[in-house]
Length: 111
Length: 115
Image (cartoon, rainbow over all chains, first blue to last red; front, top):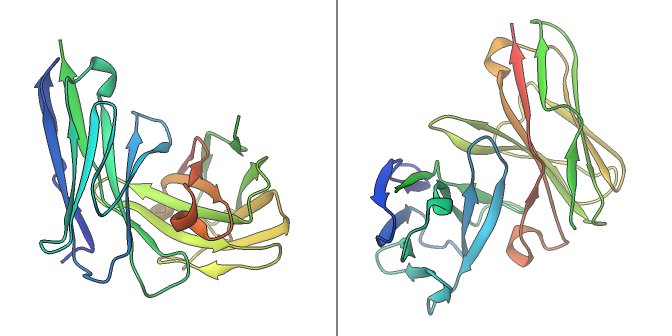
């Protein structure tokens, strides 16, 4: 089983829709969680950290479910500019600075 | 504005050639990383460095070496390039404490093709 798993998509949604991605992780001792965004042929950039209590940044909401070992990203009122690949990132124990990236979920927002 | 600069966006090399990928950051970050990104495999850590002249192996160090002689510069070296090293290479940096304490800042990537 992969350490971090994401549905690769693509998720094709109309503008204005709400879309949610999940990311599961295998190591129950994982400590920190992040969502990165990667535009086509660009580098990944931090979208938001994921806190235990859940957190919101504008149209984006991140949730952590430790019991079921997944994190989620909810995007409300999707914009065309939200089209990108969303990478789940998990810090796992077992090594200095060890973070594991998911393979990403591709989102395409269509007009 | 924070900046991580990779020297070459696109390279084409032949099998057996020695390849240097250079990365410079202007944020005075202690940590620097080299990843490769392949379809279906995500980003995988090759090497990282938490200080000048210090390096640690990541998940896939075989066939690679690194050099960090100055704080702002981290080089990835392929001693003898092979076709299975065709990939997108991404350099990143972060403050001390690593990605947990602060975000990873990535360069734009270097797409290497080995023929």
